[in-house]
Length: 192
Picture (cartoon, rainbow, N blue to C red):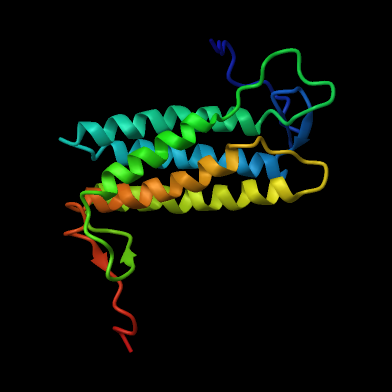
């Protein structure tokens, strides 16, 4: 269990932050950007959950995802080191990715196929889910950049989880729009 007795430490006043391994890096380091965007995604999901209303099943899925996002943040904040840390690092597992896939498939089964791209909007819940989706896409790009940076490592399932998450949030946004019936559709060239 995590215990936080003191919120400020003053150790970041020099523009650095500590990773879970104790290593100090700049606050603008690619790794910090990646887990910062995961944190931002989580905050957007907190806003979305204020609007789940009667959809207790979706609310429960989003709550599980919020917890998993803390797991992902911990994963990203703990780069693989040699020697490894003296504790077992928290990593995203294949089961977490597969659960997202099952939930996407179950939600999507009740939604008619798309006949156009959709604009973020419709219901307040859908709008917040689309906001969370776009933030999670940024996080995914940052994780991919981190993974391709020489000397940096990303655990095996972290990027897959981020990729599946944005898909989940897209489908959840359609679910929140009366299973797609209230989607706001893109009309190409409508304002020419």
